[in-house]
Amino acid sequence: MFDFKNSNIKNDVLSGITVALALVPEAVAFAFVAGVEPMIGLYAAFMMGLITSAIGGRPGMISGATGAMAVVMVALVAQHGVQYLFAAVLLAGLLQILAGVFRLGKFIRLVPYPVMLGFVNGLAIVIFLAQLGQFKVFNSEGIQVWMQGEMLYIMLGLVALTMAIIHFLPKFTKAIPSSLAAIIVVTAIVHGLGVDSRTVIDFVRDMLPEAEKATATLAGELPTFAIPAVPFTLETLYIILPTAIILALVGLIESLLTLTLIDEMTDTRGRGNKECIGQGVANSVNGFFGGMGGCAMIGQSMININSGGRGRLSGITAALVLLGFILFASSLIEMIPLAALVGVMFMVVIGTFEWASFRIIRGVNKEDAFVLFLVTFVTVIADLAIAVIVGVIVSALVFAWKHATHINAKTHTDGDDWKVYDLDGPLFFGSVSHFKELFDVQNDPQDVVLDFAESRIWDSSGIDALDSLADKYEAAGKKLHIRHISPECATLMRKASKYVEINVNEDPRYKVATDELG
Image: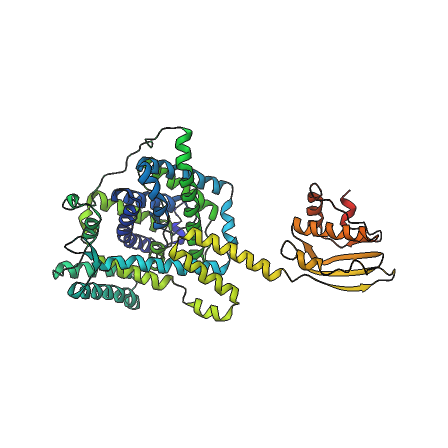
């Protein structure tokens, strides 16, 4: 179950500790985005990370509370309260489990490569922009402004030091993950030398009302089981179902795309359907134990992979260490300088962004470059799910447009003075118009043959176009024959005959598909 055979226990444990430290500010920030208490975000990071690492389909991938799902929750929490959120997360988990049971995870393979590149680049930019908020502070009037002067220089210096340690330490030793070493060193410098730098607890206090700042803490208790306190009525279902569906889709899309990315980085293959079930179980448990749910986190997953975490133990360690901090050592998390975590995330951005995209753009066609930039742009201004859906749709339309004129025909006359159209290319909705222009019904001889040896009918639009062509020849007192249609096309035509009239005459000299149409 835990796949110790294919992972390094020491690397997984140390990498998991590093990830746990990086999970804290993200979980707290996304909790505030969703409009819930910080502990609800931390509970989500713990439960999502533990369960998906244990039973999910991608060892080494880290799940937790995410911004993509947090923004979906805002309206529901604001209008109906946190208990309805727990119910929606529970329902979203059940939908994700069903997606895995019905093996829908395989459809992630339909995402084209330019969309994948756009997804990766867009998320890298989103992660970068999210870190810029750490360079802002509240002034005496309660307005958030950019850091200036000594505070800014200290922040930049500590970020640069963190990045330098992460970059150069592996050249000397790989005994400890460079990200973990950087966090420890920068934390020691800040507190050992008394450097005035913002810490994690400062970040939490900034998010709280003035009356709660003094007592702010990340200390908590074990999450407890409780059925969401909502009426079990159809009205409740109507309220939570739209949010649950969007949460389920966003969670699966982000998780499966992150899974695919890690597959490429590690030259291994995760199991998409199993990951759907793992994400679903984790979100369902969140609904019962007071967490805000979540999905795969590309930033923390990259930290884990780059730190040597490959097995399930890395994610399990991250979740358990995070829980340990919450229960017993919250003060250790609270004292970590934000600059150290920002530096870690900046290195994630550099490692995540596909810099090869700029070289690829020069070598691919304009359509793929357009899709890449479009998905990147939509990911940044909207969210991942919309970006991927838009990218897939645009890619499909581009494909249809490019192949719309790929159908053509060569003509010749056989020994019986029948005119033969040797078709080449796909016959589908996009190529129907060009297909109709290939024929000269008025000037063709009495018998005309369509030879599909090098062509295929792909959809009902193609069948309807064939039917319309047969009607034209029949109206002109001529016969249309068909040859060499594939078994798949014959099956499609047979099924379509229930709702599309098939008026194609048999070719008596060949055993053709129309023999079976009855």
